[in-house]
Picture 1: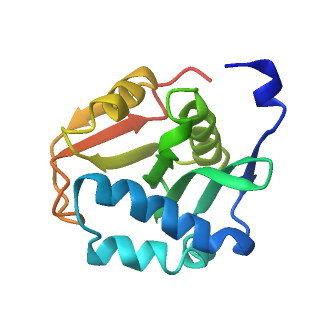
Picture 2: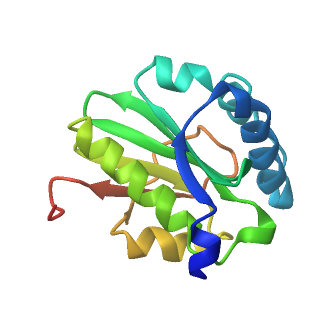
Length: 162
């Protein structure tokens, strides 16, 4: 990544001024492969509920344009779901997803969570490489939250060295 470019990049927690960007960026990536599902719309149209329920949304901004998003949805006091992670197509491959992943893991640790789960799809090969790199392990899929979800992964935070 070019240093000059990084100076223009900020990672911030959700700001209601960017709610439409959060929706549109996620809609764009989901519709690259699938259709928006009811569970997508529930999270994307009401992003403030994620933080109201103990979760967080992170945004990557280049200058003042949202180029990446990620949500940590609270499942219980000990676990979070990593969801709605995407980088704008024109900015992919530059390492911005690492910023989101680090922020998400740090958030979960600060909340004293023991694990992070995610639901993905085998088509998302690049995303899978990211999850593997950060130590996520495939587990039995026991969720029907997304009809497109055919892979469940989990990061056990108790096993990770801080």
